[in-house]
Length: 508
Image (cartoon, rainbow, N blue to C red; front, side):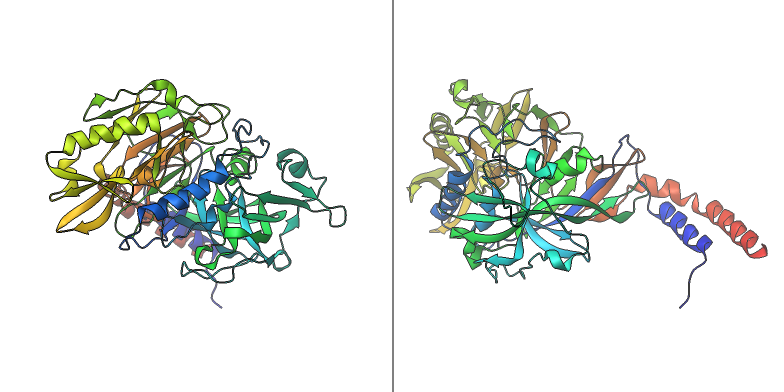
């Protein structure tokens, strides 16, 4: 076998640093990226009531927990990881579902997991799981985590500080016989899961300052599911697990950032059109158009202070108090919700304003209990812009496609229905309908969320180490032409210097 001398490897690294340049910006962390795929055939139309039923089942689980303690990189909360773990039961052929692949264990194996900003832990199906689906309607092969098949797997014992301090006491099930830190989650819709916590190696791609992506790893704690019931047992909705991006201590973001491996932030850009997909970054996506609004403190979800709604620039007559955050009120960002939900006091004037703006150019009608419109022209040319105004002066401007859903065609007219749904009481939820085609930055270090409209099929600018930025598109790098021209001009003298080093090495 031919082995390169050390100087050759070093030279190749230096050449790579020249060929793959990057623009400059100050930062202190490398960024980690994960590929996203969309598991919902966008050419298949679905009934609105199916989407509502799916979201309703999820909300029946996630919204009954009440206060779970404040967020933060290192702290845990009471019951903080329970409510969102069953999001993986959603039928991805009928609703929007974004997922990514994670690599765990040694040797590493890949697992498909849904990204979920509404839950806190990463959990994977164990090979010893009872009643876990063995096939998936997603068209992906299900993989099961095996603790005996990984040389770096370690059970979390009952006396481990992780179990005593970070694991929610309401779900903890420590057995004296096994000495394993276990959990049992039972949800309001009758589904449930139980298992135990394990630590093992987590592998991810990290972008370095020389525009190169390298494999990195760190030990993390995650859940290993050994039993499931209810909707979690259905094969047509099966996936390997859930990737929780909440703020509590057991979330992967919190675990890695508390050790300084990644910053206390993550970002996503979810592509809504075509084949879907997008980019997920453990770090910050940079864009000059980003606007930020502070997170409401001491909340279990990503709560923002929605203050008003405007249609065509006119503020709607909505009492601001209906958006005030409390145990059963407020506004949350949730990537696991398909549609968007407004409290009744805001929904009624919102729909009335939109309908009034298009009543002369569309045919409004009710279709299966939902406000719809028959449109004979482009919806973008007819429907008004909508602005959601948040604390800190940050506005989220929605295109018609971000508050309407195209349901098909009727008598030659396009049928568009209101994607925002009415809730009689409770929480306003902004799901994928609103989140798509935007950069979202969850800046946990500064307790704020930022957003900007963006074509998520394009590269994005992310912060990396050594005071540089990189442009990435689901792991593919590109650079600006100015950087290329500048650094290409340096290649001839650099090669001359490299040749001189090679000659000196050979002489010696």
